[in-house]
Length: 399
Image 1: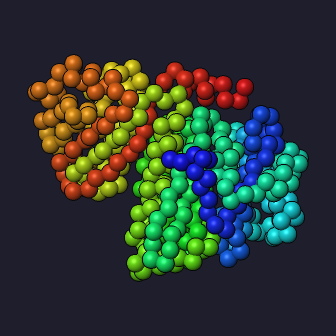
Image 2: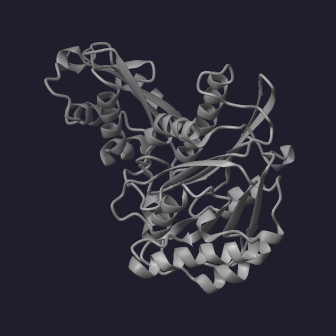
């Protein structure tokens, strides 16, 4: 992960931020991203039926050759009905007026409190300052502007040598609570100066998001505003084609950026003190493996045991058992806590000791491995524990 000292940038992509005072007055909370003309843009969005107004508008505008992304934090503009849709569209019109573009070329995004109307007057007053501050090297400022309960910005940068030249990949994300993505993460924006046609860009993003953002969970809640955008400006002159020599390396680099951003979100989970990697092996399908891993990850009993550093392995065993695997032969299941086998042959492992389990649970980074013994598929899911602070943060979220 890189910081501003490295000045990450993507040729043909500029970012500008400003403080509108939507929820706080001491920080930027408006972000504007400008794409060079001719850029391609792909996105994945939440599948929550109560999707936020900006998600609806962004979906409709995605096929209109987007040139600008407008993001605000502090207010989700979700659960706001017809007025919320009109507010999202109006924010697009304001950006278009300031940039001599068309409203349909603006993708709006919001994050924050659900059920409150967007304070458009504050946003409109701040937008000229965001336009004035547009800069290719403003990625860290941008990462901070989209934060809500995040404790730190999430920024990842890569440079890769491909046939035809060097390509940059830079991504930012926000998210710490209400994290159980379904298609995307809470908010993530990734830019590259490679030349990628939109259909292929969409495929690349969908595959990378599914293996990264869709494999993390903090609390099991899928947000109304989940959105992830991949932008390709083409300014490097390096072309990425499905059957070309650059495709595998570019796809691998994009996956690495998404993986690192996804991990950063979990590590910054609200009140988190432990980072857990849940690996399920020998499942019949990847979907089955993921479901087993997420059942463990979503269990409040498992998560609180990890917070307490309590090797209460029965909670993990119970989660595996209720995960929905049809005809699961528990005699073939083995469960490992770090390098300690805790379950085998349908019960506690014969060599397990509480002392060994306690030693693993005292660590900050812990791996739980579940071997189902019923197939060849595997999956990895990242999660964190539940602490007192998680309850405190969310109990006081609107105060």
